[in-house]
Length: 132
Figure 1 (cartoon, rainbow, N blue to C red):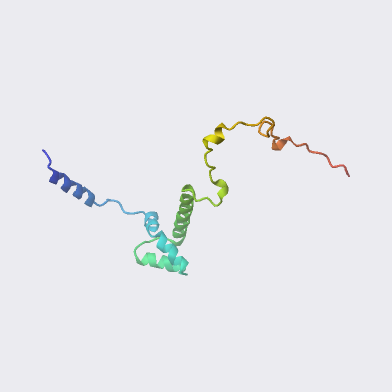
Figure 2: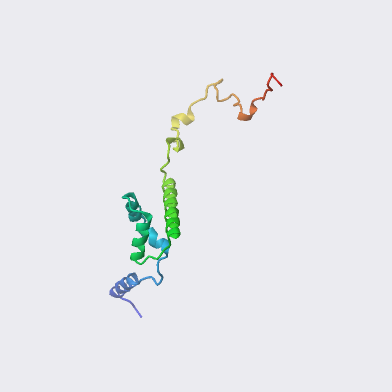
């Protein structure tokens, strides 16, 4: 059986129109409406009001489960923000790559770069002189 271009196009549209056979989990349902829920809480709605509204809409979830899912989603959102490079301070920022002039510059003799660097553990502990 050979397919024409019109047949292929019709098959693509048919496949794209197929619906998944599974239902969304409660976590996925809450995740889909996470932002509006947080905005509603920001406007002063109580947790009980949000829970009642969700139950009216057919999302049957207990209060502890709802709050646990909301907390997990908030933590995931915070982690994703950190992965994208939004660091809380500039100290974590990368230094710019050295230029070719900096790489090839001569190091003067007697500079501090040739001297040994004392380690943090190289200090001596002295006893107190006034012993009891």
